[in-house]
Image (tube, rainbow, N blue to C red; front, side, top):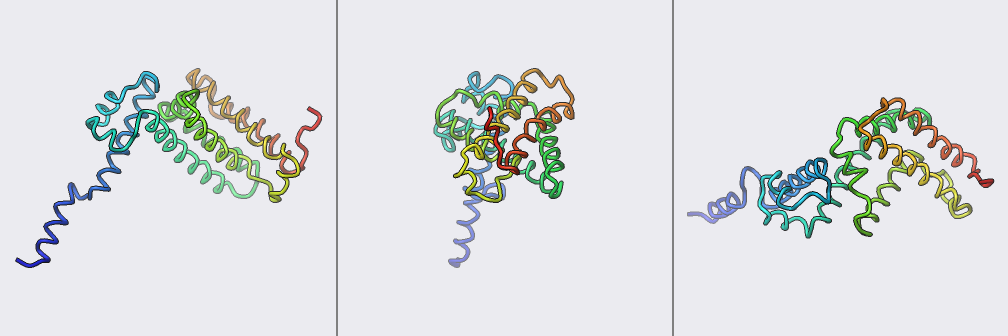
Length: 222
C-alpha cells in the first residue's frame, strides 16, 4: 500500500463526526458554557455544581477539566461569552442608527434591555451571578463595563482630555454603572416595566455623560 494511503487513514482517524480533535474540544467547551448559563440561570452560580453542569452538557467531568481549571474559570468564560455577544449586537445597533448621538443611544439601550428580557437566564449571569465572587471575576466585570461605556458613550475626539480632566473618564463609567444598576433591579424584579419605559429612564442618565463629553463640563459644582 502507498504512503498516501496511510496518511489518509491517519487523517481520518483524527476526525470524528467531521471534526478534528481541536474542533471537538472547542465544541465540548461551548457545550459546557451553554450548559453553565442554563444551570446558573436556574439555581445560581453558588448553587451550581460541576456534576450538574456536565449532566446538562451531556459530558463527563473529565471533559470539564479538559477546558476549565475550576468552576470560577467556567463562570468567567460564561460571562465573557454572554457579554461578548451582547456587546457585538449593541455596537451593531449603534452603527446602524447612524451618526446622530441620540439615535445611537436609544438604539443601543433598546437592544440591551430587549435582549435582557428575551434571554432571562443569560441576563442573570450577566447581572446577578457575577458579583462578589473573587477579584479575578471583578476584573473581568470591570473590563466589560469599560467596553459597555465605550459603546454607550464614545470616547472624546481628543484623548488628552482624560489626562487634563479625570472626570472625563469617570463620568461615562458612572453612567454605565447607573444603567447596569437599573437593569439589575429590573431583571431581579422580573421585568415589571415595559422595555421602552426602562430605556427612557436609562437614556436620561446617559445624556448627562454625552453632554459632559461634548462640552468638557463634568459637574464640577457637585
